[in-house]
Image 1: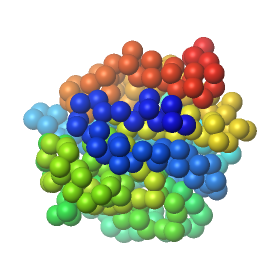
Image 2: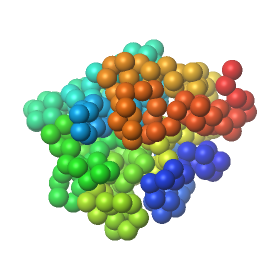
Image 3: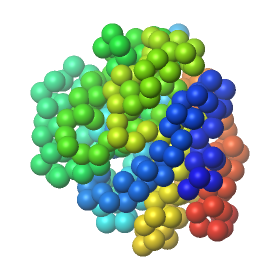
Image 4: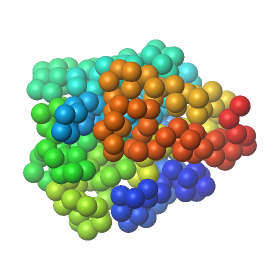
Length: 294
């Protein structure tokens, strides 16, 4: 498990090493907790408004859809919540992943719709919720991207869904502004990350995975689950492949997603191409399954 964490939880240039150190061991704890799930809800979607670009980013939906598909194939009921600006991209990722997973869409200002999703998740007996690359509220109550820009016009308050139940909450992020980062020691994000005082998410969680790229955190959870839940291992192996990662990334780019770092509509995630993501997945496969991708 430590080897998996070392692969996915590393600073790729955002000055997040102190956040990674403060959450050391959390990936294993999150995988152990998720292995006990009865029903899982996932939350994702991060919108990029920059100059003449306005689109969902590629990080988050791919990892969410592959984790959701793997869990569903293992026999768990799974739902994904996303707000309307990112919904088409998440649905494209789910379709490409090839399993039936319900997507609950919430309008940015649709409070009754959000309440309906909260009640639906409670009624469904959701036991664990995983937020992956989902912008959360900062100290002033507004969600902000890494540049410090207020993205509330494109962001529904899914923090309220994350915190609405007695479920175990797992946060996966890579910059300090994502759901779950409130678990970190007070002031750490502000001292470590550029714009940290403005962007730091105050919404906490039970287990926090600070990854180099949020999709990697989802893949780390899949590899960790393969170690702790042996009967799921061969099933999860089918979904955690470089080929699937690239296919889903291409699918969501066709649906309108852009790279969150470059703001370009291309099959990259956080500025990294498929050769980087594919090599990381191959390494996870060697660690968790003793083999590289077929």
